[in-house]
Length: 290
Ligand SMILES: [Zn+2]
Image: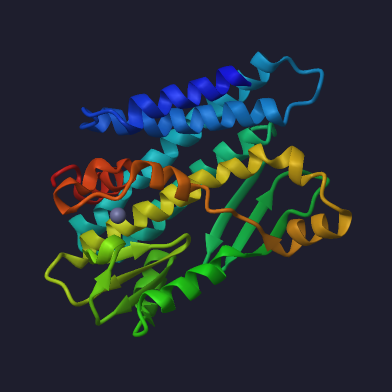
């Protein structure tokens, strides 16, 4: 186990903290290896006793890398929102990214390739499976969506649901006509929660770019849910009643991205993109021109 923790540590030191992290290639490598490593380690955690660890790892790793390529591809597509000033590009980007995230998650559970797929829509999470002995279709309520709605109303008392953008993006969008403030009262133009985001119309910034940027943050959040697979041995020890609720009604998703984001830190405007997640979001929203 310690070797894997070491691997993760090295991985973050190289990609997330690198000072020369400019370039498309680094983001590609980051996305592919994040998928590969999280799936590989998850596959060891969830392997049957008789499977050797290295076998489980490589089986998860290559599937996770493939999923990582799709996650990267989904993020690349987000640029089309800004390029064509058309929010409908949100759907294909989301579907490709979600397919990638499903493949990574499935591999991290040490399941056969492509057996489980999932998609978030508003407060609901849809699961599909090709496993013959299971219910092919499940709908669960995402517990964190409640947080999003509360956080949005705290963030801005004048927040409104933007139905048009929500429909076009396949993702819940809020807007406000007041300024938005981030960490240390810094002016911000948008903020992503876990499955929803808010933007302000009180800005000269290009709103398509702002939304593309926030959209990438939601993808980052989604990718980190793979850690639920790592906790599987723990959660499967829950009581049958709890298990039944989690498997059929409520999908629990701790905000895994938050500690990673906080480690990267908040920075003043001129150094804002020292935070890797901000850097990645802006890169994909602007094709690296910022
Ligand atoms: Zn951001």
